[in-house]
Amino acid sequence: MYWTGATLKTTFGQILSWERKKENSNEDWEVICDDVEYVLSINDVGCRIRAAINDIETKPSPVIVINPEVGSFVNAQVRAKSLAFKAKSAAGSTTWEFICDQSGITMKTKRTGPHHQKVSPWSSVRAEGIEGKEKEDQLVLWMDAATKFVLVPLLKGDSRFKAIVIKNARDFIVYTIQQFVAQFAPNTNNNGNN
Image (cartoon, rainbow, N blue to C red; front, side, top):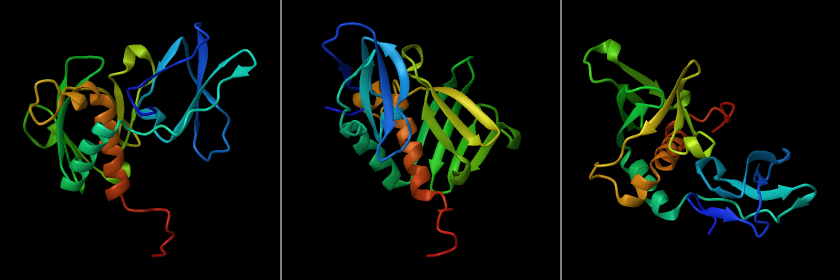
């Protein structure tokens, strides 16, 4: 079981360095954390994980994938071209509503008016989870190159989501946004060739 939410442990029984490397990458292994165990997260999708202590390294894991149950809900949201969720600021009490469709993401406050919402096309949006046990429910959302928010998704009590999605709320929201970007952002790597 090598998908998000799973816990990796070794037989060493002591604190080790957990390392990550993107599949098919020439980059060096990146140290993620030092701990006895490691919980796979959204940031590990598409990567291999290993543990290291001194000059000893474990065999790299298979490529990490999103939890299949969470992934099926992500696919449903992307197929429907629709996602709505609430999130609060990780550093305060402000709550926003987010609405995603094929054109982009809209961020709204409780107040009304044009200055109380921000709309961004998918080509400007980026999302990722924040590393660390104390922040495993937090994500970073860039609405554009200069506008970044650290958020905690608020899915509890929302009848649209099953328990597995609520338990993995951060990974669900990040992966869904990443899939919206992959599906709906204009492809800028084709150099004008179709």
